[in-house]
Image 1 (cartoon, rainbow, N blue to C red):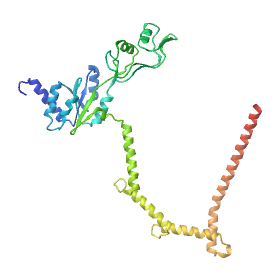
Image 2: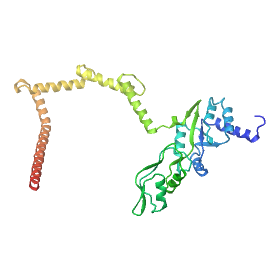
Image 3: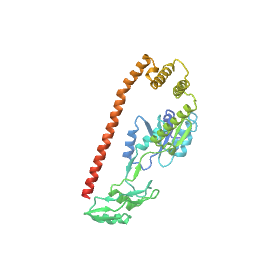
Length: 336
């Protein structure tokens, strides 16, 4: 760096130190950001990221000096446009992008600025009394009229389409209406992390949608793993539990006696025996079996009685409903 001013050498060294000490380095465009708003944005980044504005050629030199330690970082030079600055942080690129987007604020449209989206004058009361402003609105294509002593816009009207330049008279009218269609903030162009450069459009993700997609993919993968009995640390307990349940059911259906199925098999056999005994005459069974049948009958009686009462209540409710419907029909006929 022979024949270079000392302050430039110091500036490159400081930039290099900042880049080397950061996990993530990005390029932001600060063009057209008012000084006051830039200061507010910097405050929101305190402790999270550092914004460093310098001459373009000095930032490029610093990136070149860091290329040995951070391979391919010189690729960020291709994204220096407008009024570029370095943003250095240890946050991941997606978090950095979100913070910068959240720090953006609305601003009035300036004559000659380019609309990023359609600029719309909404329908409704403008709050302005009749006067020259009515003609100004009509001149820019806004259907306005006088209603109850106020200037009223008849319908939503696009006055500047996305990508078009904002005319001077439109900018003036929008300012008077307190419509701030422009978005002012640090425009992240690209981010470097671990040898890769990510452009802004890659980082612009819907967090809720992405999380929902990940959860859905996990659920499908989990179900597939369980269905195919492919064991993983996440599914092994479910697979074993499912296998145990299937083996148990097979044991019961096939009457395979084990220490796990014996209680259920005996209970089922006993129930079938009692059901069969209940079909026989009292002379064909002994006293012990008769006592068991009697106990079963006594235990079942309250249940049967409750079921019968429930049926009776339902019948009564239906009769009441029918009565009410009949009465309503009679009143309807009476009053036409």
